[in-house]
Image 1 (cartoon, rainbow, N blue to C red):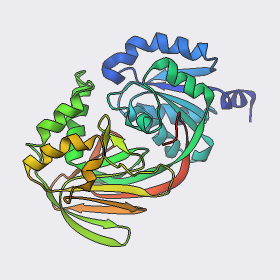
Image 2: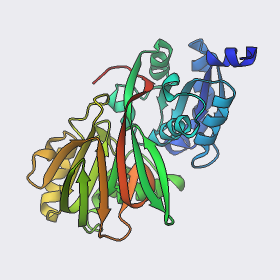
Image 3: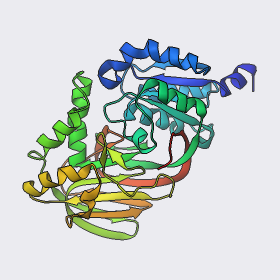
Length: 318
């Protein structure tokens, strides 16, 4: 290994999404850069320019010898950096470590681990380098009739969840996203989304549900604080799963307040599971999926778990 590579092993590579937080990063990057310097973190940085660019940026940085990464943006940017770890095959994923400066509209992965949204405090946490090794989910899905693979660190949502994410992401792309966008789309999509029959294989058991919404994941929160998987443990080697079956509009609206506490899972029309592998087939056309808030493709899906592989910097272990 040459001198440059040795140097880079101890240097942070910062992936910055300037459009995160409704273009907030673009306005605040100078302040963030100063705080990183003040924390005496040796770093280089690159701005993303389009969707999925963070994956390419990350794999290029790995080839240069970087092993320590900071994601500046929302859950989607964080997801892309992690996918960059898995996209390459020369370095074991366990050799990387990643911290987050959260500036998105959801910040749900950071909520699980007590990462504050303030720049100074989140950078202080990165400087302390308190590491935790979490599980990672792997998804197989279809896009334009081609099978694709994506890794995720938080939650993958299907059906109603995917519709809400799709609307929210469209607003973000148009520069109209904000902290209330998800809740607004959650409310309006209740009238639009029609449940459909899904065949679900959870490990070796098969179920057929008239499904309104489904979530499979590693952590507990999505949609800006909804406790979708209230019992999830990020390093137990298991996927948690919540299935919301078809229910009347009145019941749905009555349960909205319970989404944020996680108590909605006690409703008889909600089923919860743990598994290492989940396969989902749907009779509903264009049954879509999102992962870590990013819109992906359509069914059939397969979700599996990669146990305790990703080193992340956290504030508190839940």
